[in-house]
Amino acid sequence: MARSALLNVMVQAALKAGKSLSRDFGEVQNLQVSLKGPGDYVSQADRRSEKIVREELLKARPTYGFLGEESEEIKGTDGAHRWIVDPLDGT
Image (cartoon, rainbow, N blue to C red):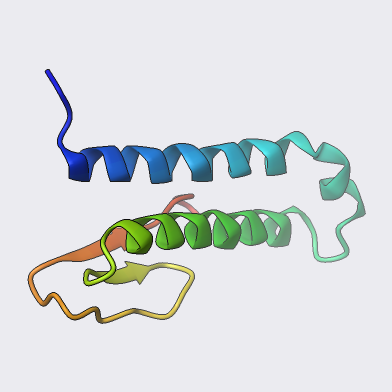
C-alpha cells in the first residue's frame, strides 16, 4: 500500500533526525569529556534532533503549527493542524 504524502513527510523527518541521533550517540568520547555530564549531552542531542524534525516538517507544511518539548511553540496559520513532537522521549 502506498503511503500518503503527509506520512512520507513524517517518515523522512524522522529518518533525518534518527541519523543525527545515531551520529551523536556514536560519539561516546563526548560523553566522557562533558563537564555537565551525560544528561546534558543527551539534552543537546534531543534539541538538535527536534530542530531537524521541526525544519523538515515546517518546510513541507509551512502553515501547520508546531509544539515540541525543547522549543518555542509555533502557532502556524492553519488552525486545524499542528505537529506535536518529542524526538527523544525521556529527556
